[in-house]
Amino acid sequence: MGIASKKQRVAHIRSDYTHELQHMDELRRKRRIGLIRRLSAFFILMLLVIGSMVSVLDSRMEQLDAKKQNKEQLQAKLDDAKQHKTALNREIKLLHDTDYIGQLARKDYFLSDDNEIIFSSVENDNR
Image 1 (cartoon, helix red, strand yellow):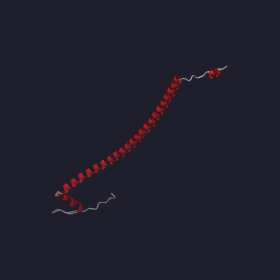
Image 2 (cartoon, rainbow, N blue to C red):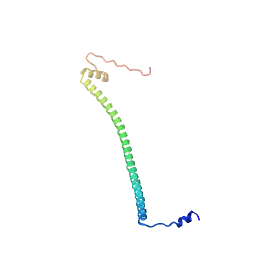
Image 3 (cartoon, rainbow, N blue to C red):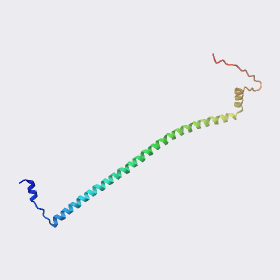
Image 4 (cartoon, rainbow, N blue to C red):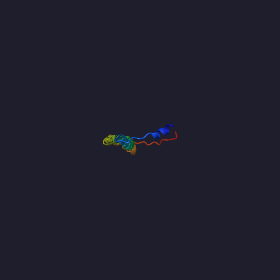
């Protein structure tokens, strides 16, 4: 007779003790399966939360980069505007000076001062 026939001849003893042990083993197995399921669900939930947080963080970083680039462009415009303002203020101060106004009138409009003679010459650009 082989091993298979020996197993068939072994009878299980049904006692309260063995029944209680089997019941405890079944409870441990169910608890372990429940724990694995809960941990798996928690792990998946945490992956989803972390994934969404990373996605939000990435989009915020892109927005921040765009705003920094926009700030740099606006700062360059502001610097240009400040330089233009300084030049205009200088021009305003010069326009309050009568000597400067006289120079402009003589240069641009060929006006003359007292006892001045204006000579106009035609310049040849082909020289």
